[in-house]
Image 1 (tube, rainbow, N blue to C red):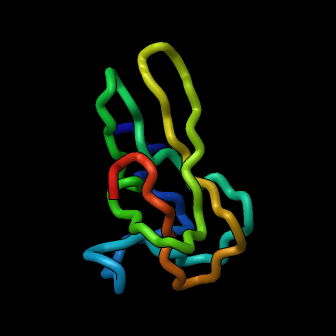
Image 2 (cartoon, rainbow, N blue to C red):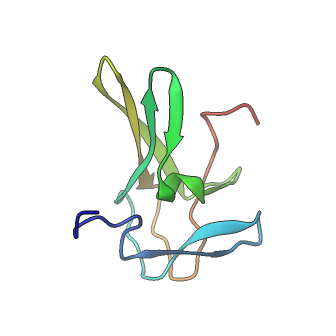
Amino acid sequence: MPQNYKPLPDSLTIKESHIQGLGVFAIKDIANDVDLGLTHIEVDDEIIRTPLGGFINHSNEPNCIKVKETVSVDGDRYTLYTLRDIKVGEEITLRYTLYNV
């Protein structure tokens, strides 16, 4: 594995969630409109979750949003952006849109 590979940015960690199972939490304050990284990749109509995308829990009042970017005819990529400032200890959440909830 390349030495520069990081499954999560330095500002995040995974731990037990009060929402469901494990979740992604801020370990540093994070500003509004920050790119937290790649959450999902779509290849041939199959959605593949990255480590970041695998632990984000749903909220009806999310603090992040997935932004879809079409990178080629082969598929799309989804990147996570903060919707507001996030404080240390807050769980990173989004409104699920890839799946029927």
